[in-house]
Length: 364
Ligand code: ASP
Image (cartoon, rainbow, N blue to C red; front, side):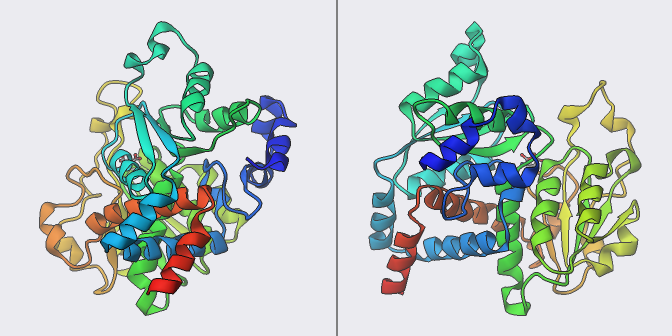
């Protein structure tokens, strides 16, 4: 880690660091080239960094098509090891990070259940993370707990092994790398149609507890003239903090429970599932009428012919299987995009981005 960065972070106690304005926190977590050293929040990415990562993901995707290209990629971080520490359920995020590490030649270890680690014996999270940092060069973590990745990044900064941490989902709060793959999907889908500015995004489902929508709304602030339409049953509507953030940036938004009224206006429809694992009482979500927040084939007729349908997955019944064959359904592609953008993020974290771009320039 860059000395100045370490110094900037350890100059603060945890309480001081936690209370810093987001902009200052992001500056503490950045490498000298501006890319994140630890990736914890969507707010760490400005437009230039997003464009850079998306371009890098596309170059990696091309390079990985040939055996020679894969050999090149796998040599880049052959000397690194990553701990994938997921104490919350995951299929796609886990597998895409694992694949991303494999593409770059990184060896991985994993803990997917705190019950099989020493945390079960009463070890603190700090000590567990400190242990991982003794064996690994990168920690990719998913937790129930908001702010844990941030606290661990701060704690490691003052240790003798200040390695990077990537937040792969923190409670109901943030999922920055999902937002990166959503942005990459939007970019790719609209690149031949003038890009993703002056567009309308509709988010549908459980917006109160869905971390992906929160992170995506944040990243979309980097794109000019975006209208956000939040569609949900009243108890599942988007948090006031996100609306305040949109207000602070002068972004346009609509909060509604009428999906059909606004469906014809959307360029991207972002469906989400009901996050009932967060229910405070048994059956809380089941008592909410969510029947109007599902898409079937007939609803897709209301969408623009060139709009796209997205979902962070897993889905339940909020998108009917019959929609999968519609060319506007992008969720399977979105999932695969996750592997490429996460590969790009890890490559950038370890400063391999220029080597990849040079290889691309010389070979394509
Ligand atoms: N996979 C996403 C997440 O981890 C969405 C979801 O679980 O509904 O937040």
